[in-house]
Image (tube, rainbow, N blue to C red; front, side, top):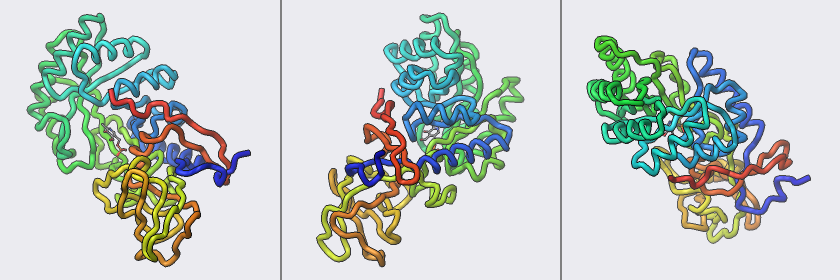
Amino acid sequence: MLRVEDLDTPAVIIFLDRLETNIERVQRLIARQGIGNRPHIKTHKIPAIGRMQIEAGAVGLTCQKLGELEVFIDANVCDDYLLSYNILGARKTDRLMQLASRVKRLAVVADNDVVLRGLSEAGLRHSRDIPLLIECDTGFGRNGVQSPEAALDLARLALKLPRIVFEGLMVFPNSAPNTHEFFSRSLKLFREAGIALPILSGGGTPALNRLAEFSMMTEHRAGTYVYNDVMMVHSGVASWQDCALQVRATVVSRPTAGRAVLDCGSKVLTSDQYYVQHYGRLAHYPGAVISGLSEEHAIVDLTNAPKRPKVGEVVEVIPNHCCSVSNMTDEVHGVRNGVVELTWPVAARGKVR
Ligand SMILES: Cc1ncc(COP(=O)(O)O)c(C=O)c1O
């Protein structure tokens, strides 16, 4: 029997009780809204966890990259996927079509006519219809058409192009400032144009507490909720006790009274900060924050920590952004009551194409 203390560091562990609770809780929350739960696999990248989400009641899964889809379809996790990324070029659209032939439904997004025309040509080459959502930018400032009018224009093109089956709109994240207004206006505009919008796909873990505000959505894609992290606690959607992924790391140095150094640098924790300060927290040392990272060193600022770890001690870090930690590690260890119950390879890590 392997105990958690037996793992060499740095090691990424998953508290299985928390993982299971997070999956069930969010499934219930989304089902209570009467909409579909379509989790994004980007947080865990592990087919076994995708299977747990489907078994809990998810209608399907979301992937960001073709390589992730390949891993999940090879593992036979489910037969209904959304690929929430513009797919460009025959090399990629041919892969998309191959994958579509292996599942019941594979929908994809587009936010411009070049992507749309490329998908239509791929559909013609492979004699296959492609379910399509138009991605909308409602204030996040990433991909997406910029207005409901632009969504309608692109939808009109989608309806004309062969092999494209226009199904609706998609946004990330719901919590972007203009989502409600954008989608309300789109509903009106499309209704007036006589174009049906069977799917409105919303997303993001921080919006889970506000699902009722987005009653027009037909499905929700959350990802981070399976593990949670400092960002999710900061956004009020999770507590520290909901953080299922933690990094076990050894204190390798205590150069000053106010500083500790851990053996998990940016190669493990990543330097993502987004809207929170620092790079992570020490789970059992209140006030201890990771204030700097180099590749193999995490610098812990202990100034505000009444209790301080010693050299050689193993500590548990709650990262700022758990999704990018998944991407950095070959495997994660599932832990229950101090025992390592299983080790999952992170099969879809590093799938950037
Ligand atoms: C398109 C899309 N949908 C859903 C999600 C899941 O969001 P979250 O990780 O906030 O739950 C993401 C996350 O990056 C995303 O990019």
